[in-house]
Structure formats: C-alpha cells, structure tokens
Length: 516
Image 1 (cartoon, one colour):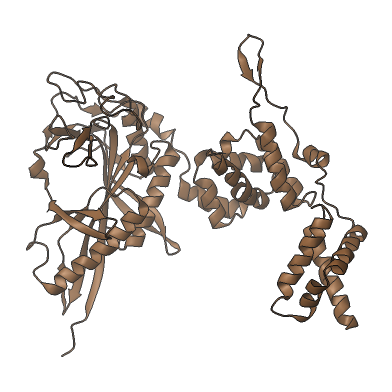
Image 2 (cartoon, one colour):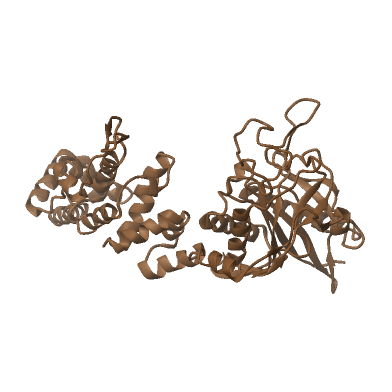
C-alpha cells in the first residue's frame, strides 16, 4: 500500500513586544537607559516597594494610540490596567502591570507585500504594559539580575494566525519594525531588546479526508528577523515529524508549549507548558485609574499620523518613477524620505536624485554612522548636483567626488569663532553651489567631439592588445572595449563624457572592422 498523501499548512500568529521611545519608564520617573550601570535606574515604584504608587507615562500612552491608529485598530474610549501575576527574579513586584480585557486598541489590520500582492494580517489587539528586568546567566554557577529594564514601556501587538510561512512572518516583522521606527514611537533596535518577537506556530495536516492540528508552540524572545524565519521553519518541520511518528501529537491531546530558540544548534527547545489566562490571575490594578480617551486626545494623535511607509514607497514609484528597491531604501528613514521630496520640490530630476540618494549620499552617511539628514547639505544643493549630472554638465564619477567636497563644506570646522552674544559657535563655510565647485575643481564634463576623438586615438595607439581583443575575441570584446573607455577617461582626467566616449570607441572599432 502507498503512503497516505499529506497536505500541510503552517499556521502562524505573532506576539511582538515593542519598547516605546520614552525618556522615562511606564509608571515612574526612572530614566530608560540601555547602557547604564546595572541596577542604577531604579526606584521604589519599579522595585515594587510597599506603598509606592505608579503614575501613567502620558507620552507612552500617546505613542500606543498612534501605533494603534497606524494598524487600523479600533481605539478604546475607556481602557484600564490589570495585574498579571507571576514570579520571576527579574519581576520584583511578582506581578506585571498590563491590560487584559480592555486593551487600548483592537480589531485592526496590517497589510504586507507577499509575492507581488498585499496580504492583510488581522491585528487582534495592541496593549500597554511594563517590561521585566533582565536575568544574566554569564557568571558560572549563578544568575545576576539587572532591574534597569523593569518598568520600561512596552507595546504588545498580537496578530491573528493569518501568516502561513516563515517567509511571510519574516516580512511582517521587517515591515512592522519599519512602521514603528517611521512613526518615531520606537528605535526598534533588536540588539538592545527594543523589539522582541514571539511566534505561535502549529501545523494543519490533511490526511485521508481528515484534518489534524498539532499543539501550538510559542517560541519566546526572538531578537532578529533571521531567527524569526529560521525558528518558525524548524518548528513547522519538527511538529510534522512529531505527528508523523505519533498521531496523538495534536491539539486537545497534548498541551501547548513554550519553546526557546537555540541559534547555535538551529533547533527549538522545550521550556514549559504554555500558560493560559487563568494562570496569571488577572485583576484590575487598584493603584491606577482607568483612562478615558477624549475626542481631543484622538484628534491630537490623529494629526501626528504620517503617510505610512508602504503607501509612501508605492507613491514614490508611481509618482517619481523610482525603482522599487530605491524607493524602499529611501523610505526606510522618514527624515530621509522627507528630505528627498524637498529635493524634488527644489527642481531635481527624480530618477537621478533617487540614484544619488541611494548610491552616493546614503553611503557617505553610513560611513559617518548618521542619516542623510545629518550631513548638513541643503535640499537646493542636492537638487543642483542631481540636475548638473542629469544634463551632462558633470559625469557620475565627478558627482561622487563633488558630494564628498560638498560634505567638507557642510561639516563643522575644527576652529571656533564667537557669535555676537559672545558664545562660542561652529565656523562653517558659506553654502557653495555644486556647479561652482565643479568649475573650481575642473570637473565640468568635456563635450568636445574632436578633443574626445583625439583621446580615443591615443588610447587605441597605446593599447593594441585591447584593440585586437575588442575586434577579434568575442569572449573578451566587451571587457576590452570597457578597458579602452577607462583609458580614455584617464587621458581626459575624468572630464570626458562617458556616453560620448562609448559611441566614439564603437565608431572607431567599426571603422577598423571595415578596413580588415
């Protein structure tokens, strides 16, 4: 008998913890600092001392509302706080302040690009809570606890199980990180624990006319996109193998599990059976009053909602003709995207400006570990550089060099001067036109056909082997012609028009073929 045919479907829901970008903690005035000495950013409130009373962080609440709106959620007009009881050494109160039955946002959706179309993923809820501290297991034989993180504002976002592959979940996590950083509600740096992903994974198996569902495994505290994809892919394979070996490995017959991801071994590992809501003994927090969300508050938050990243990428492609890749790169940082649109408004040709932003300015910014907006170049300067490149006044090589020179003029000098009040201030060079700089540096592109023909003749005379390959060696013809073009550019000091050089080289090669 043949083996029964199995049709499987992976079912994935996500829980995402987003650390909100506030200066102080969720319910006290302690600073939120990643690099502070252990246990230095604590107080009686976040340490859970008897009698210490929490106070809501208004900015965190506003950030949560803004994110809920961006996720198309219904915003609760009345929401409250609950105590979620459990004990860990890094949770000194023995309970976490969270939200249970009245979250501040619910029933939304987030659309992500999947195989050339937009897929809608439903958002179950988004609620505020406080983070726990951090347990450190580096010391041999014992565990250290750093409570600096205890009380940090977290927004927990929970999806419906609408994702069906590790790749889809990977895309969702990337797009969600782009969203929260674009909104400014979180820095989203996973290496600092500012976004943590917890996929809930199980597998639907259709066999012999019946469908079986494996138990749900929640994979805890993943802090990279790659780990999300790899852990889900492994877990789906593991559950299918477990069911194949024992058909009783299914929901209602086996408990759901919490599992951890061992990146070194590439496997998930059992931690404990998964808790359910009754295990946490939720009850309303007696120290915190419910929040009534007014019309004025909603209007204030709604006014802060920008055009969102996916929609903006699509518009840059359709309105300005950018490639999808360049649009995605530019929109990754909201300030860079805003600056790009100011450059277009200043008269830059969009296609050239887009390429320069991605290939020139972003590289220079990354080398300095800053954003393009921090380079000190004005929109009109970006626009002029793109324009004189597009019209052939300078070539791409000269544009790259000019960009670096422009930064030297834009960046603060080492010396200082005094302003009129007597305060010390940067000395900056006056704003310089890229065209003026190109003229001063001798970078204006030569369009003289006669002069360029002379350079081509010199290059051909000095490199007979390359000419021979270009004429008679099909495998090396393209490379040889490129080499000759490079020699012409060298002879011209980089001033020749590359397009004109290419045309004249091909003309000369055609002439030589006709004489052969």
